Amino acid sequence: MLRIAVLNGPNLNMLGIREPGVYGNESLSAIEAQVKSKGDELGIQVSCFQTNHEGIMIDRIHSAYGSEDGIIINPGAWTHYSYAIRDALSAISVPIVEVHLSNIHKREAFRHVSVVAPIALGQIAGFGASGYLMALDVLVRKLRSESSEE
Ligand code: DQA
Image (cartoon, rainbow, N blue to C red; front, side, top):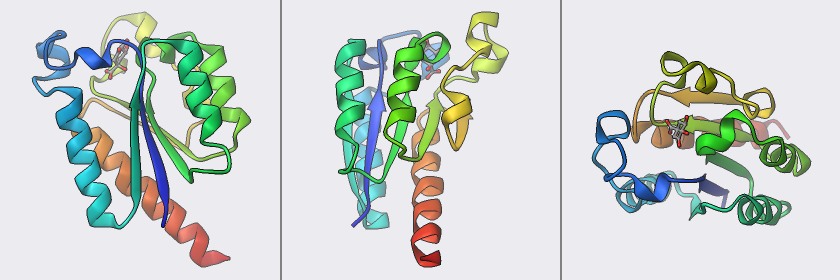
């Protein structure tokens, strides 16, 4: 069974409370429940994790090495400046999809840069919570097509 980690960075535990006009009204636990049920539909194992601490996220990313097949990550503000998160993701050679609830490209200039994007398969931004479900679909499709090539 494919195993996918769904990781959320700083301040995303505040979803539902934090700037609902930008990030929506749903809580992170409601989004995670949708992602898990989509995982059940797809017949895969989903493990959800959120932290506000960069070192803890780095350790969680490392723990995916050899135990998970793909990562969906919303790195929050780390997206824009954390070379440490990017290096952790590239160190483990696991396919990555970057997700943002908001369309970072039409917001403040500092949000237009993603240091994670160059090492990701792709980025989904601007579709709210649906972005995580879209990411799960594309990642599972990609992993399944690769394993059928072998
Ligand atoms: C975000 C966008 C980031 O710029 C911001 O710092 C976040 C959330 C998003 O999901 O739209 O924390 O990653």
